[in-house]
Amino acid sequence: MARITASVYTSHVPAIGAAMDLGKTHEPYWQPLFAGYEFSRRWLRDNRPDVIVLVYNDHANAFSLDLIPTFALGTAAGYAIADEGWGPRPVPAVQGHPDLAGHIAHSVIQDDFDLTLVNRMDVDHGLTVPLSLMCGEQHPTTGAWPCPVIPLAVNVVQYPVPSGRRCFELGRAIRRAVERYDEPLKVQVWGTGGMSHQLQGPRAGLINKAWDQRFLDRLIAEPEALAQVPHIDYVTEAGSEGIELVMWLIARGAMSDVDGGLPPLLKHRFYHVPASNTAVGHLILENT
Ligand code: DHB
Ligand code: FE
Image 1 (cartoon, rainbow, N blue to C red):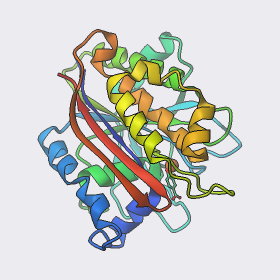
Image 2: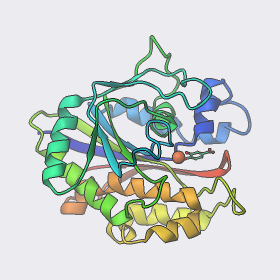
Image 3: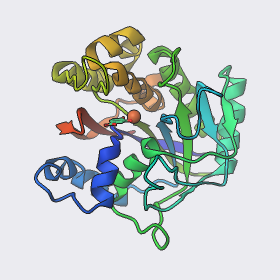
C-alpha cells in the first residue's frame, strides 16, 4: 500500500522564484532566506518521494471569477507553467500522476468531499516556488522535478474560503485515500502559502511574528485545536493573504498521528522576515 512519509510546509512568495530565476540568491537580501532551505534540499534528496501532493492556491492565473472551485485536484498527466505576466518561469513543466490522483479523487469524493477535478491547468508560483525552494535550480528543458506532482488548488483568494477545520478533515481523507492505494508508493503532502502577509490596503506589509510562531508551534503540537481557528482570525492577525495558511492544515491533517499514530518528527523549522513584504515560514515533519 502507499503511505504518507512526510509533510512539508512553506511559503510560496513569487519574488523567491524571481530571485532564483534572475541569479540573485547570494545577494545579502536573499542569502539568509535561501540558507534556511539548505537543509531541506539535502533532506529531499535523501528522502525522495514517489509522488508529492502539493497543496497551493492559484492566484487568478488558471482560474478567474468565471469559475471558483473550493478544492481543485489535478488529475492530468502534466501541467504547463503559468504565464503570470512576465512569461512562464524558466523551470521544468510538472509531471502529474493521473492514476493516484484518480484514486484520491474517488476515495475523497466517496468520503463526502466535493472536489473539482481538473484535467488541464497551468500552475503558478504557488506550486512552482515551493518546488524551486526544495529542489534548487532546474533547467527548464533538460532538468526535471524529482517526482510526479498532484496539484491540489484551494480557493483562498475569493470569498467564501474553506475553514481550517474543513482543510484539516480533507487532509485526513487524503491520508485514508493514499493508504488504500494498491502500490507501495512513498507520498509526501506539501502545504504552501502564508505566513503573515497583507499585500494591499492601509495594512499592507503587516507582519505578526508572534502569531506566526504560535501557528508553527500549534501546527506541530496541537493541529486539531489549531484547525478550529476561524478564518477571520487569520485575516485579523496575519493579514488578508495570511488566510493562505489554512492550506497547511491539509498537509498536517494527512499525518498519521492525527488518527492514532505516533507524533511526527520535526526535522526542520525556519522563519524569516522579510521576503517581498511577507514573512516566510517552513517546516518539515516526518511520519515515524
Ligand atoms: C506575494 C504573493 C503571494 O502569492 C504570496 O503567497 C506571498 C507574497 C507577493 O506578491 O509578494
Ligand atoms: Fe500566495
